[in-house]
Length: 122
Image 1 (cartoon, rainbow, N blue to C red):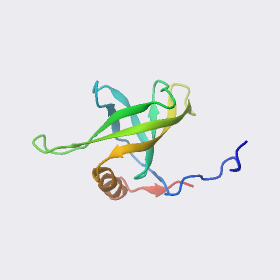
Image 2 (image 1 turned 135 degrees about the horizontal axis):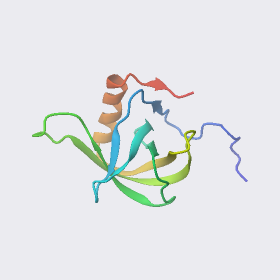
Image 3 (image 1 turned 180 degrees about the vertical axis):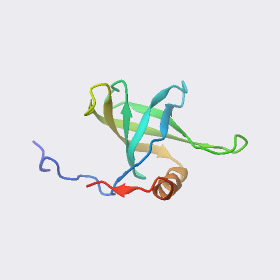
Image 4 (image 1 turned 60 degrees about the horizontal axis):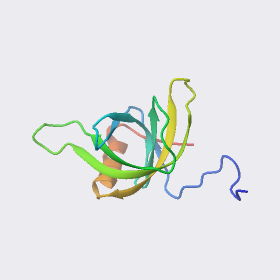
């Protein structure tokens, strides 16, 4: 039995809600995994069209807009902790903690806060 009341925030770093979406790809297959629903330097939520395996570690890539000659992606590994149907019946939401990543992911979160005009999740 969990000691955390239902609905109570359990993460230590506030996540931010995106007003637009960035696509996340499987780094090994380059197939789309979903769109970022919210993100922090420690984790993210994806909105996808298929459910994912809970407990698995996924090799992910976020492609960033920019000139093709520059490295315009961020690679990281993340473990899925939960997956459930979204409000929309054709989508699934899944929550991940970032397992391995460079400082790029922290920089990305900061840039996204400005670029997408984040608003804090309730």
